[in-house]
Image (tube, rainbow, N blue to C red):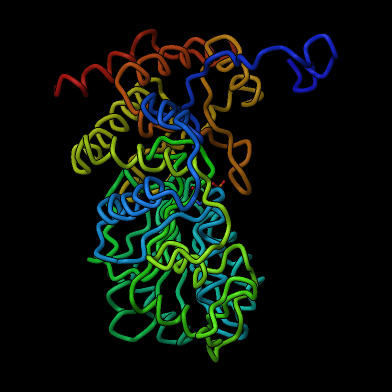
Length: 418
Ligand SMILES: *Cc1c(COP(=O)(O)O)cnc(C)c1O
């Protein structure tokens, strides 16, 4: 079915009723039913005490999720990229030197956003499928003396997890700020904001938090807050008589101005945008589900489920992608076997015939690997077994024959601890 099939007038007014899918790509993923339910709750005014109480609860819940004491833990309205852009645009003044180590697509994205914010960029790069030794990063910091280091934690484009603690602690000592993009890891593997000395961390809901895309949890250390407030210019029309512009360069984006967003999330409740009500309900419920299970229990579930999936793929004779020591716990890269002529045809069969979505890949990996996500609500034994069994069939019908049943048996063995 092409995506324009439903533009005809006979179907234009049909009820919205998509066929259910099992989302096992790199995100978005299946949403917790409790989150969908929360999103259908009644609208509230943004200054209704009920709603501002929910805002404060969201701050408290995400402090736990991010493992931080940071007062400024709030939501930026927009997908994960809006949180990245809010942090980088608010932290980088024109001309500031910024170091971005690139190990996949999202390092390029941080670079691009930091450059638009006026940063003077320095990059180091490592091959896709590997991560940096922390010393490579600290050497580059010593050599270039940036004002900000911006790093991706888990890069879904390569399925690799970059350790951040050593870099964070080194930068804290040196008075350099560190930003981390944890969109793909939050809720699925440890994100230790305070222990790793991270100054600004942003995320999204549509990966391991298992919510819809559309709002971005962000947390800021005191050091980050000081740097941002040194650039604070409150817009005319809402500013009080006592409001004085800070000396630093004005933050170029109004919507993503974290200085003004902090005022909105503070007891001042200084009006900015209208907080996205239903997305705030979603974010609140995602955190409640994740914390209700327990962060550590959730990390263990992600680890075990990936292990089972990987055992199954290997038993099918497939080769896993990337440095085995630094794989993320929630997305697996697997080489498309050579006997499969077109990886996209096989992927489409998985979607059309089995209702299972897995991911393609970008850049240097395009056409070479598939990416299979096991995140949040979707990160379960039943889904791993369904995916392996369907993939085995689809591969066979497309010219790659694995030992029948071997994949599912190997996954079962992981679960039974054999
Ligand atoms: C998925 C992902 C994003 C996604 O950003 P959106 O704006 O929500 O599409 C950003 N960063 C990383 C590391 C990701 O894995």
